[in-house]
Figure (cartoon, rainbow, N blue to C red):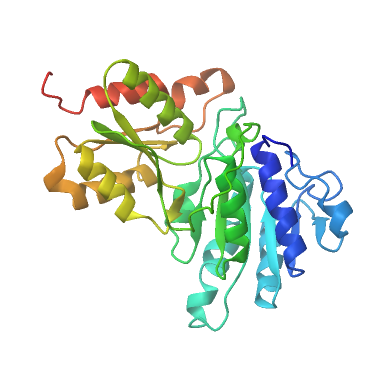
Length: 326
């Protein structure tokens, strides 16, 4: 791997290493074989491991997930790719009715060790069906784990952990960070279910995940230049949710803003705001604010900069957190 791999290269390495370590790991989806996927996340896997372990499928997302369910029930560890976020919706019945429920339906006798990779989110100049933030659909479905990396180190570590997990994991990959180059940390990646504090701060806490983590960090940098000390918590794992890390960070500052790309109504951001309010009520100096996408279908490319949470909108929300000077 190059010294500073892109997130695509980190994900590719995770798939390569998982397939090398375990012959039961198979990768399939639309164009993931010889082409290497539309984003090249699976580049070279067919050449290295053969067409029986990394192969193309028809354009049939429900069929892709259904085949993965059968494979997982019979001892394989399938990793399937949904080419774009909204392309996964035809597979939703399989995911909700079978992927999420077979473990419970069989009282744990049948587990489904499978991963559904979903490139998601905006910021790439795409159109609807290519820029959805679909995490709420999966997070609202008991029986699924839902994770999303914000760094290249997490992209590698969380994908390896997802493939090794005995239960189904929806792995949401922020497309806008696919070409971000970062050195990979050598320290072990925290397990699924743990959030991390990306930046310590004493005045307010920004809570973000996936594509909004770099935006929150940029907002914290700008706030520091203006004399305000903001911390940033990266959720990493939406399900299970790490209440301990989040509430500890918010209780230290007494103020919180949740940042997410998805529309705010009935969203993961809303759930986080509710959990923080319930658990930190007596520590809060102001109501928890949310900065999210608007409650509209994803806009055309020329308008997405207005739709996506940016530094200015985050800092405006921070300004509204009932500071003494205001």
